[in-house]
Image (cartoon, rainbow, N blue to C red; front, side, top):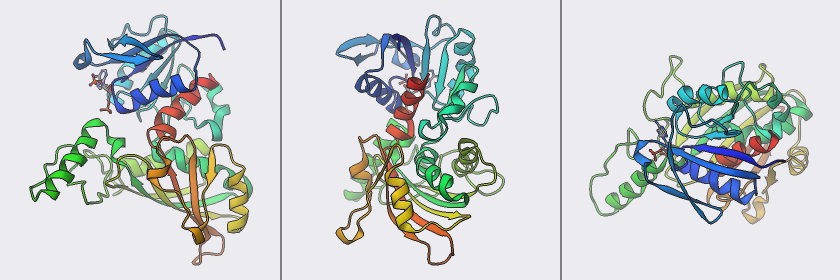
Length: 334
Ligand code: A2P
């Protein structure tokens, strides 16, 4: 690949800085790097491949001469600036939800639907973090036995809500241990020592009683898998974990798959690692999966309440496979 000029919009954020790290670690061929952020970051720098690079303020003119732009600066920023970038001939890989369900925009998880990338018209969407790790595991099961329905509950880490949310978890934990009142700003309730069945914080609920995060899992799964007949129901929950999303997933299939068959299929699936030895208390744990590229699956068992369904536990690093790594993999495909 010829070296590219790459911009990272939101380079000072949690996902943006992970994008820089991942580009560096995977030795993405970069001619020149352009870190972009808001006015607040004027004068800041980032370090890339040992060099100090100044952060530029994102504007409509930021993308002239840029080949690929990785966006992780919020939905509003993507809505406004991704079309400007595409107009200037740059290909945008957007981590926000702004473009995901646009029929003109491919929604890509390389292990699942790399072929969809060819349909892009300047913008490619990176799916929701919880959706990415689930579909990587669903794909080989769907190919083998046709998935008809998925019931998922998520246990989502706080880092998915950004830097300020992580500070809030730490500050609340300290406050509660010191017998003080925890202060809430990023979340509607204390997240320390708690589980909140609402993601995101504001304008979370849709008319059907599901949260927007839950509906993302429903709609994005069908789009990525290229099959609108897969029924999905989701309950998405924020838990007091720094990083690493966990999911309890029940998968109904048209033809029965035994737990052994599923383990066999998943052990050969790209990007998936099976960690499943209950006798030795081996199963995926958020703490162990952080910093790793793979999606981990364990606790695979046949659902005793259904003739052809499986239960499983899926864990991945939400900032890596759930965001930065998947975006860089898309850029590599480009
Ligand atoms: P900044 O640091 O200048 O606010 P996180 O989700 O971890 O909080 O990070 C959000 C990222 O998106 C940050 O890099 C932030 O930059 C960037 N960002 C947020 N709003 C804008 C905006 N309007 N224009 C450009 N960058 C933005």
